Image 1 (cartoon, rainbow, N blue to C red):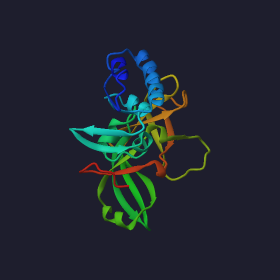
Image 2 (tube, rainbow, N blue to C red; image 1 turned 90 degrees about the vertical axis):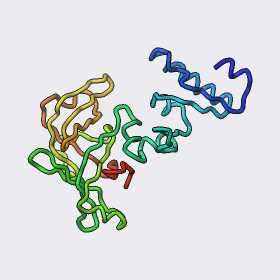
Image 3 (cartoon, one colour; image 1 turned 120 degrees about the vertical axis):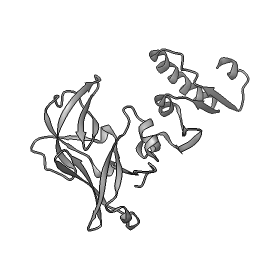
Image 4 (cartoon, helix red, strand yellow; image 1 turned 60 degrees about the vertical axis):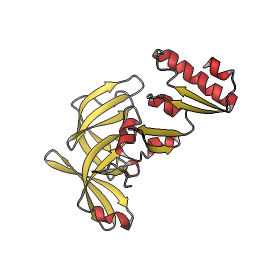
Length: 224
C-alpha cells in the first residue's frame, strides 16, 4: 500500500489488503484506511469478502455474485432494503431472517400467513399498491433483520404481528443476546439486550410491518 501511495495515482485498487491480518489488527487498519481515504480524497476501489469492511469503509457498495452485480448503492441502503435474497443473506452478521409465507389480501391490506406448527401466524403488511394484488394466494419469502424483532413485555397492549414463541436457544455475545425461535419451518433469530429471556421460555415477539420485506419465491427479487 505504501508503494502505491507514493506514486500518487488517480485511482487506487486495493484487493483484499487486510485478509492476512489477525482480527484486532484488521480493526485498527480499517480505521487507518478510513483516515487515509479522507486525507487523500482519492477514488479507491476496494475488493473484499469481509462485509464488515465493506460496510465500514465504503461510500458506495457493489455486491457481486457469479461475476454479476446484484446491487449497487449506499451501505445503509443495501443493508435496509436488499434487492434480492442473495444480498439479504450476504449482507449483515447475522444475516436477514428469511421464511416462506402465503399472501392474502383483505380490504386493500396484505397479510402474510405462516404455518407455525398446528397454528397459523398472520403478519400484517398494511395497505399495498394495487399492482401487487396479483400475489393473492401465492407463496412469497418474507425477510426481517434480527434487530428489528422486538420482545413484547407482559401487560403491553397487543399490536399487529405480535405472537407467542418458544425460545429454542440463546447465543450470548456480551453486548446482546442472539435469541432463536421457530417460525414456520424456519429458525428465526432476534437480537435482544442481554438476559431478557431464557432457553425454553415462552415469550411474545413483534415483527413490525414497516420492517418486513417481501421477495419473489422463484427469482428471489424484492417485491416490496
